Length: 296
Ligand code: GDP
Ligand code: MG
Image: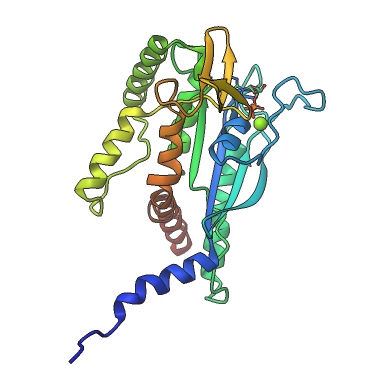
């Protein structure tokens, strides 16, 4: 007799449901004006999602405080829908005195946790809770080649307590490969020195293969990236790139910069883990603190 029951189709049933619903991914970009935040997001997702006009655009006001601006887009690839919330932080780090300029960012991240908790607590009326919790914070470091600024240390530390922080060296084409590698080593030392605990995290659930993968990511962080929304011709082929005083940079060439590593990490290897870690570590920490406070 045929002993096939058919429950192995549950994976297809789950897939069907997930595809219908789509995936929500919320990302925040933090760093001074002009560091290429908008350009990088547009390059990663191969779509023009954010205005990338730069510091000297005529209609850009000089901001006295950090603003929070969120935009939503749905992008699709082979039938998989990704709902993206991209949160920009114009004005961050642009002042002479930057004391407290991170407060609106931390508040925004916590507010999303708080909104989610409220929806969770008001019974199970919504079958599916709209998720605005930030899954990833791309932190843009000035390519000075020297060291982190005090504000970078303070803010990455504060952010890493509430969100998955992924540091990147912005506009890495302004450094030579040697300068870049020295800068990366220095930044890594400073992170250790200031006990900044960065994503990815290994937990009891992390298997051997994932531990290896996470280790290889830690060896690259901070990603030295170059973004571009226009093409350059290299060997007769049009590629995403930039011309600078040393020549042409192919954004997608791993010998030129680490853009491809960052994109693979964000979209191909850790997208699901960023989402899960947000729920299981950052949101859970927020939630248990809130619930404890309620009891007191
Ligand atoms: P944002 O203010 O951080 O969002 O920066 P934008 O994305 O608007 O970029 C500011 C300016 O820097 C624009 O003129 C971009 O073309 C340029 N830019 C963006 N990314 C890079 C990069 O990786 N390298 C270099 N050299 N310039 C870049
Ligand atoms: Mg921008």
